[in-house]
Length: 113
Length: 108
Image (cartoon, rainbow over all chains, first blue to last red):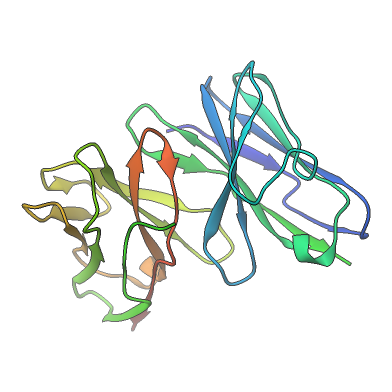
């Protein structure tokens, strides 16, 4: 299965600022997925990112708030913009693997103060 | 919207088998049944997946009902390291949506 390196692992940010989360995969993948996990909750899909096209966002998530880049087949970034305390969550990236399962990064734990 | 229903929590004794149920009565013919688990402070980890037939791997077994409206994840011998939240997910064309999952507690 793919190996994902996600950075940073955690951060504490001031409200009104932005944070960019990076996801690096050790193999080429067509689709990358970004999830949010709010405290004590399950995972919610934010968007799907294909290389060479704009990301597809789920209901409740907008590009202005969560811009995504996908410059190549092994890398993606998610930016959390104009942060508020409500954005405090764990953010995770995920990719599909050849065997049919999905691999997840270890997550970025974001605290907004 | 999650398309699966799981018990909120289950308990097991160490070294005993665990059967984690999942109901997915609205499953379509092309939905794969996936199971993931999330240990504390980690991202979800793939456990197993299947379409129609029962599946076995080194981590677990997946038993799928004949009508595919339910499935059961079987951990053959629970260890303390198996304590986690287990998610049953229907996946169709990369549409992976998590429900609330089952929190498994393993007692020594």
